[in-house]
Amino acid sequence: MENNAKQNIVVAGGGTAGWMVACALVSQLGHCATVTLIESDDIPTVGVGEATIPTLQTFHLLLQLQEQEFVRETNATFKLGIQFENWGAIGDSYFHSFGDTGREFWAGQFQHYWLRSKREGDAHKYWDYSVEAQASKAGKFAITKNPRMGFAYHLDAGLYAKYLRKVSEARGVNRIEGTIKRVELDSDDGSIHALHLASGEAITGDLFVDCTGFRGLLIEQALHVGYEDWSNYFICDRAVAVQTQADEILTPYTRSRAHANGWQWRIPLQNRVGNGLVYSSKYLSDQAATDFLLQNVSGDLITEPRVIGFKPGKRKKSWHKNCVAIGLSSGFIEPLESTSIHLISSAVVRLMRMIPVDGVQQVDVDEYNRQARNELLDLRDFILLHYKATQRDDSDFWRYCRDMEVPESLKTRMEIYQESGRIHWSSDELFTPNSWNQVLLGQGVMPRHYHPAADNMSSADFTAYMDNYRASIAGFVEKMPTHNEFLESFIRD
Image (cartoon, rainbow, N blue to C red; front, side, top):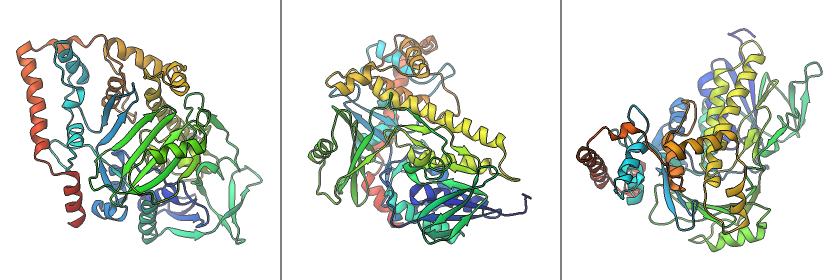
């Protein structure tokens, strides 16, 4: 294909994944590609991935979306992190905040300073040095530059898909309403030739993006790439979700509360609250999970409880022949760290960087799959840490998690941290050392030693430095508006 010849890209499936992909492709490659999206109003989407991480801001800049319009149209609220309860031990609570905690120095991250202060008898917590954690605790929020607050969003996934659809169609995406009944493969090379709809229409293309969810209609049912099952690590394989009426006070964080057989999420939006229980079918029936969730939510129900099954793991190939799987069709671990929407955005950016110019090149396919796999392996280890680093023994579920064998990569990282407080990290990992620190410390993994460079200051200078840092955060947070106040002003302007 010549550089000046437009290629035809077909997105199979709508929902959050399909419209994120279509919007990105038409926004960045509309000059060299036509984008067609096929979706059926009769096929429901999962639509419960309603908490995000800060990378969504960058994605929206790429799409040139107007932030206030996005917040209004998706009933979004702001998110400074996740509050984890009962994970390390029953009664424990810690915060995984975005942004930075303290300041790094040449020998490592801030935890070494904090470990010194703890050894010298200071009782202040690691999170006392995080602007985001302290703002969350006070129920406050603002978009600031110095210091720059790390934040993400809570959003209505259904409204987000509708918003992106409106933007995408205005920019030239062709939406076709219909159900895909058959995938036609090329008789010569086995690539996808056309998607046949129930209406009898056949949609041909050069490149196909599978956004059909767990079904993997193209990547698995047609191309049979296989699935890498991670259920030996992640025993949660079900979720039940329900929506309740909104509270008057909108907390600027997601809540993740561990229970005897799984964990419960709480995501506050402007007009409602998203609730759900993630659990293992081995230890809890769907009915018992539903009953438990309904007993542990506040506010009147808006929807009926909905059970969703999933198999933790990934496709053995995310890109095969002329088909790229993005979203749930490429795999799924679980929603614990709100990464589902991020994985969609990172996948479509990766695809755009390797977009075929003169037909699909195997070298690009191999590199795409390598990067996608490494991204998921790093994410797997980080999420698995939450289950492995626990002292809970109150149920078979938690005893399994505590005692299970984990990948050598995670085992080694935990051992290094416990010995020296060091976190070896590569720049292409999603979660930074600050994130690892917060989960490790929050769940009771305490290093035996810290880097000797943290002893450079005299005791008096060191105490003053730490005191001043906390005081600067406290003064900054005190001047911030509440989350409700900021949100009302932000939407109104």
